[in-house]
Image (cartoon, rainbow, N blue to C red; front, side, top):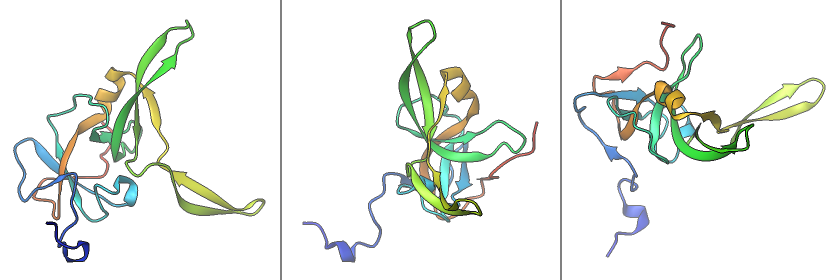
Amino acid sequence: MFPPRGNTPDPIRALTCFDSLPPHHATFRIKDDASAPHLKPGEFAVVDMSDTELQKGEIYLIQYEGPQQNRHIVQINTGVIGTLSGRQQLVWWARDLAGIRQIETMDDPAFGQIPVFGGLSDGPYSPKQLRRKLLGRVVGYSKTALGGLLAPRTEPV
């Protein structure tokens, strides 16, 4: 028999809670609700830095190209697009775990309040393009940085 919901000390989680880091793992601080419900603001994603093998539906830490090289937790998925030659091509997409949602409202003098949305898909990517951006697979979470904290972004190389 299961205990009543109100008496459960911790909710059931899809990710394992780590209290130490295995080799080739690091932590990444969660700052917003984009990774909900699996990762919560203030927690740390535990990332296997040796695993960038593409797996549909898995969660990864990605580093985007550009001057700031922002890092973000994403879930990857596949899709098919039509090419100019009429063929079908398998491609990859990255998105927030929380999905499409309104994250704020912007005031515009001409139009009033305009909703701003987050969680839109990023892509399409070829497998090679996406692998180049992935830093590692998210395999769990922790309450502290466990001595292996990755910065949210790095300086341009």
